[in-house]
Image 1 (cartoon, rainbow, N blue to C red):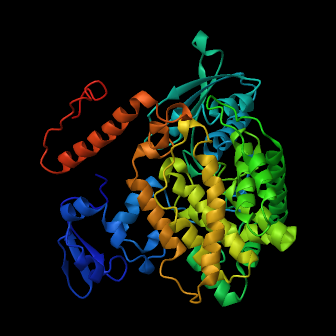
Image 2: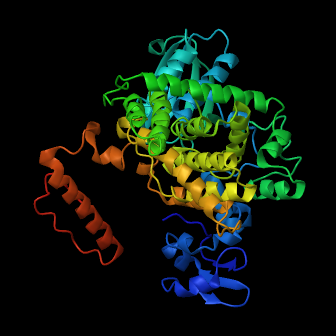
Image 3: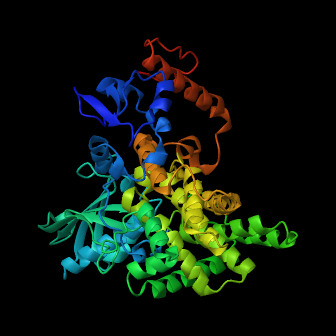
Length: 539
């Protein structure tokens, strides 16, 4: 059980900031008492029902974790520290090699720092922890490290199912005086943690990505504060961002859009199989050809999917893509924007404005929650990408700032709970199809937001980010980019269940469900007759 509240104390939640008493009164599983100002419950009662409690929170009253009780906020900060200042969007949109911003982009950046700090060193030993070890080979982490540290020799040690100092995706670099086989002297050691989207944390904290920006000076902390400033100043979202970010952001976003279009053009031409043992075929080219055979009034959805597939397949090959917000979700935003530029005939400058608008919601996720699948599952990657794409589409279709936020919120809300379970560790199954379907979902969220006549909406984007983070904390570790849960567990070698084992696998799932039920009730023994060979023991 994850404990959010200090033991042996009663805990008081101000009803005006966290819980709706009317809703909690209907929640009979939680024994609580009420007065006009407080909802009171004991520690044990709260812990026993915490997994149900988020569904009863009145998120309309919560815009960010800063409005939560300090003890809960502290627990969340240990999992995903809340940054104090928005970073530049140049670090949200990175032009890098795939297939993973956290597993190739982050390690590549770390290698460049280590290489610069150790001139003349010809031998390195690199220790990889957590998800970097569990899925690193499928994510080409070792290839990225070896290529970046070249011409030095590199030995990689994989620490499976282990974290570095209690934190996910750790890297320990040892600069050596000679080859590892000669018992060399360790000249220096450096630790990094890859925190998603290509960003890094070292012993001093998250490496600064805010230098030169004016977000703090302009009191822009989250989506709520940005929207308030838009309404006060009369500026649209993108103009506010260009005023607060680095002076060369527009130039950078033009390069980003060029890189996105290039990845689409390359991906639509290829018909081979993707690298790795899955032998997964590329489908973007044939999907696009099929779309062009359809009537123009019905082929829009298929074209959007083809463009998103093209980018995601390029990413799976380790080719150059742009994080949006990550490599694993890099096909959603360009897939939709490319189609909209075709249909609406908008200029590249308009697309750059749309990228800045989308970046508001990607940066907020990066700052106040996470964009790492290893921390919160795929909801933090493709889910945030859907929110960004929905915002960009709504901007291009003329939506106001509040309508843009509604589209983004709907996009993220619709992806809450999505696990990260890459088969065999490759960013292929289910990642590529999720990008294609995510792009079309973003378009639907934009249409829904534009069709509503009430500019106000019940749940804010910041509140949805908070819900995503809590959901990620409650998610089993096997579903957070470990490749040993979900599809990665049930689909061996990506070829479906082996026929003769199908019944046993499904039987095992049922047995595990029964075991969990018994554990939670009266510890009744479980009948495993017929499954002794695959279930040697259930504790």
